[in-house]
Amino acid sequence: MANNETERVHCLIIGSGPAGYTAAIYAARANIKPVLYQGIQPGGQLTITTEVENYPGYADGIQGPEMMIDFEKQAKRMGADIRYGLATKVDFSGPVHKVWIDEEKLIEADSVIIATGASAKWLNIESEQRLNGYGVSACAVCDGFFFRNKEVAIVGAGDTACEEASYLSKLATNVHMIVRKDENGMRASKVMQDRVKNTPNIKIYWNSETIEVLGETRVEGVKIKNNKNSEEQTIPISAFFVAIGHQPNSDIFKDWIDMDEAGYIKTVPGSTKTNIKGVFAAGDVQDKTYRQAVTAAGSGCMAALDAERYLGESGLN
Amino acid sequence: MESFAQLIQSQQPVLVDFFATWCGPCKAMEPVIKDVAKSVEGKVRVVKVDIDKQRQIASQYNVSAVPTFMIFKNGNVVWRHPGMIDKSSLLNMLNQSA
Picture (cartoon, rainbow over the protein chains, first blue to last red):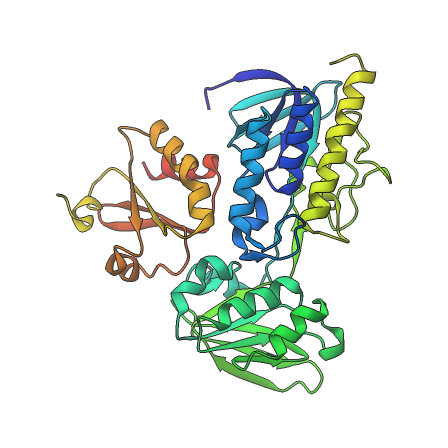
């Protein structure tokens, strides 16, 4: 691409979930003039959820996408420069941190806050990839609508899987929930487990693995195998939803930033500092334990304060 | 007015954004698509199909995810992508199809 525009910024924030926007609110108030790039999914993972019941301050609950609009509005009101665009490459070798946006624009930043979050994991079987968009989906809230009054399956055992199963149960005739472990091994919180177990049209298949999603041009069934007795069965379905967890969006940083084997960015305990001076990480990209909107927001605040202190100490503000 | 069937017959690539008004990711893609449309102006036509209003078109092309992006050329689907996509990947696909 011909466009070789370069821009110098004081504080660059990459990502637009609760961590990114909270960092933007604090950084704007600290007058370090944050520029935030929203990435491929403005608003982050919460834009593909339904009701958020556990974010303090919203006494009556709120829809995830609406909450993220509120976050964005507040960041803008504080004066943060919010832009859309995806960080595609970085170079953290020098004191000034280089970040390319959409492979065409170069940002040179004194400080960087990485808040790129996490995205849905896939099973990585051939039939799942082939039928993606033809009944295979990782977003029940986006695509459940297409399968009203049909039979659907969901694989996963965490809170997200339970939330999506319960959302789908209102649309689909039956929801077949495929869980790898037994009843005692389910990862989801008690309240979500109970919700799923008490929904009459959700049928749970314990100790079950997905062998193959069936169908030529669209999903027609799923073959599963009981991992205790090796029995196989085929369930006729029109849609197959995947909710088996998340992986951090940290790929573009891996040559520079220390991570664990799963790709979560390592931060200095009690701070958001990474191994690179002036580069901070907040939210799900560095948190494999809590992964909540409110903890992401909390670490976003920490990152802005850490960045402000860094700029002050380095005489860059 | 030109029908959808006529419109996709073009020799120039046509990018179609199958979206729904109630879909969060579709909304998030709006500025990206506008920007892409601007940078390929004159070379590629960009159209949006509201799957609730144009159910027939959506079901004809087997759309079962929103957003779904397709590139048409001479009436044929030459590329298809379910879900969100970034600007440079979309531009790359359009350049390849041109």
